[in-house]
Image 1: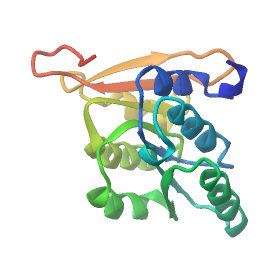
Image 2 (image 1 turned 180 degrees about the vertical axis):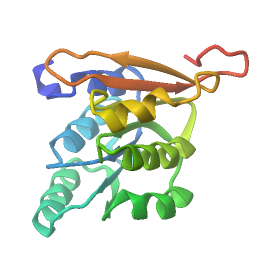
Image 3 (image 1 turned 90 degrees about the horizontal axis):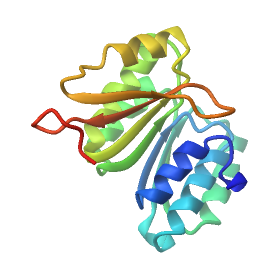
Image 4 (image 1 turned 135 degrees about the vertical axis):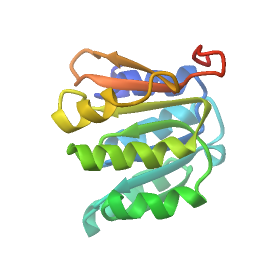
Length: 177
C-alpha cells in the first residue's frame, strides 16, 4: 500500500468506493492527482474515470500534470487560476463528483469559497475531504458546516495532517453509506 502516497486515506477511499469522478482543489505537483486516477482505474476502465483539477499552475506545472494524466488514459480537465474566480464559473458545468479533495487556500475566505462551490457537486454518496484542518481559516470553515445537513468527521491519518471528511446527511438525519 505504500504506492498510495502521502494521502493513503484518500486513495483507499477511492479504491473501496469505486470512485470514478474525482475533483481536486489545490493540485500542487500533480502526484496526488496521478495516484488518485491510477487507483480509480484499478476498478474501472480508464475512459470511465474523470479528473477535474484546480490550481494556479505555472506553465511548466500545467504541462507536466497534463502529461501525467494523459499517461493514465483518463478524461480530465484542468482549471488554471485562483479558485475564488475559477470555481464559481466552473461548477455550473461540471458533473456530480464521487470524491472531492480540497487542499487549496488556507484562509477562511478561500476555504469557505472552495467548500461552498464544491458542495454543489455532492450527491448522497460523495465524500468531500478538506485537508489541513489545523490551519485556523480551514478549521473555522469546517467548524461552521451545519451538522444537520452534513456529517463531519475529523480524521488523523498517520504521517499526514488532520483532515475533515464531510458527507451529506440523509433526510432522516443519518449519513448515507
